Image 1 (cartoon, rainbow over the protein chains, first blue to last red):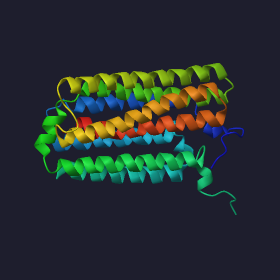
Image 2 (image 1 turned 90 degrees about the vertical axis):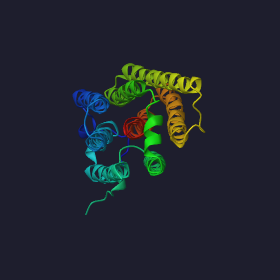
Image 3 (image 1 turned 30 degrees about the horizontal axis):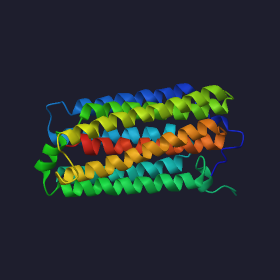
Length: 95
Length: 182
């Protein structure tokens, strides 16, 4: 793994604006998830939308908070597993 | 030929990633089991879910992602030699963890006042197990954040922040499944 104690590479030093954008995105998506449940829409649509928003939030945390944006292979792997998990949850919800 | 492996690409300590993956698998299995048992009584699960304090849980999501932001910011500031700002951010992050636990406590107290326990319905068994186990991680995370604010070298802060982001990530998946998918 990359040594945390060594002099950090520039690419690993997220500018605050990037981190702030991630935070605002997470807040907005969380609000959207909650508001979705108040819509008079079919449960399948609401459930699918909520899970998609949750997966986007998870990816933002993995990429920006957990710093995997600089490790694209790992980010892709985590994203794939999270999407598979979301699909399984959605299938169980829709049955 | 490259002298780095895929493992070397991971930020921070390998053992922290082993912990993160293990925790995600445990909570993921719990949520899949929850959705599986829901199939046996979807209307009962929907009725039970209507007793949850959804607004409080949504607010707690905002609290936790803000806390995660401060923890990530602390690492950035520490690397930029802004030590005091980094420590304050870690303490702020821990305090938001305490806010999360207070709101969770109010939610549990409300359930107790309604006479809702583990045995009321299978929904509540999963609810208490998954959210309670998560709350225990939040409690541990608060202690870890305060510890790394005290012993504030970059490796400690990165490991503490990673633990906290794992707690955040688990809640991001737990919140919609337990509170929103009715």
